[in-house]
Length: 286
Image (cartoon, rainbow, N blue to C red):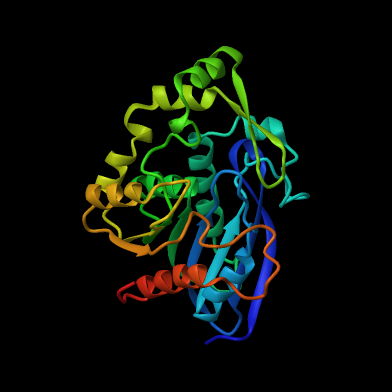
């Protein structure tokens, strides 16, 4: 157990020069560390729902835990927990986030950016961030281990469940607004997101990406996930049989966390999520 922890906040450059708000939590008494990079999902951000407690839990076990806001998730470095840039949010897509990850990796693997040496780089993605992580890992050798938390098995978030009427309206108007149940904001999603998918062919095919992944991969999913059904986790494990599937019985999409998370203790479901991931990273059974 490491008790001397540091948390460093900084800004990096993402897609089209937009700024990425970043922080890293790590034990200050170790010279060389495994780095974990966390990618959030749609309507999420790096500090959503007690993520600082999760970062601390990993750091206490000897990891450096880095989390960041994607360049077009609607937040800004000045407002890292608030959706204030709706133009960016409307134009967000998978290609932009792949570029964000590429630029992030290129910057954090430069010498002297941290007080410690990076021993290896592991990528965690939650929800849509899981798809981003799968696509990136399939095409980038800089990822040593992959972990997906409640990840979909397709690159069609959030429109995969919409009916034909809503899809046609989206195409006609070029944008559709979806209510954010937490913030009560109308979040605009540009039709370019579906156009990107239709034009992408193999590039956004999660099945092909999953089949190509040769790195160790842990899939964690709640069996009562209301947003991304557990069947999607099982589908990912079929496409990549070498991946380890760890289910958390009776648990939903956010592993019992909400935002803001005011407790100083994680809920049991999130503890199970963290502990299974740590065991996997240390080479033990989840």
